Image (cartoon, rainbow, N blue to C red; front, side, top):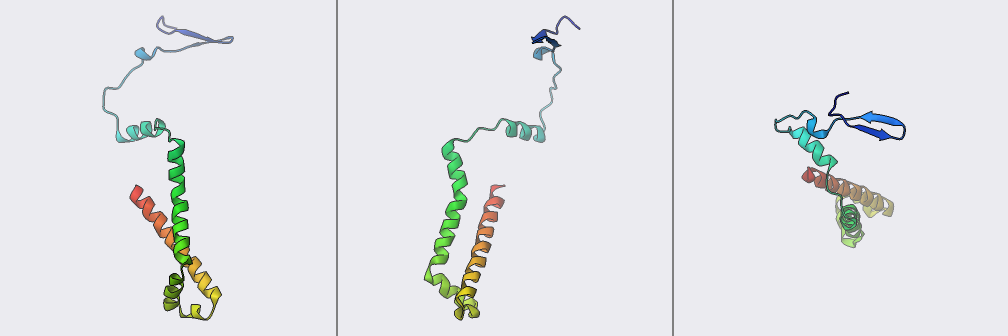
Length: 116
């Protein structure tokens, strides 16, 4: 054991370590991956309000789509394109659900693509 290594005692165990100033350093600039890793490890923690706003975006989108598909005008538009929906309320309802799911999927993925 060298003179520069301090001895740290934890209970009955003596552990020797290096002083941080004596550790070898690299003078080259960090790579993009290293910067990304450090940014990920030490990113700023979100406040409660920021977390609520981030998580509530999906709820707002679903609520807006639900309201849009609840309107009688949406029934008329769907009946124009799906003629069997004129005869059956069930076909109309299933069509609205499928279009709702497709619209949500598209909006959600557009948000994710734009985010990256």
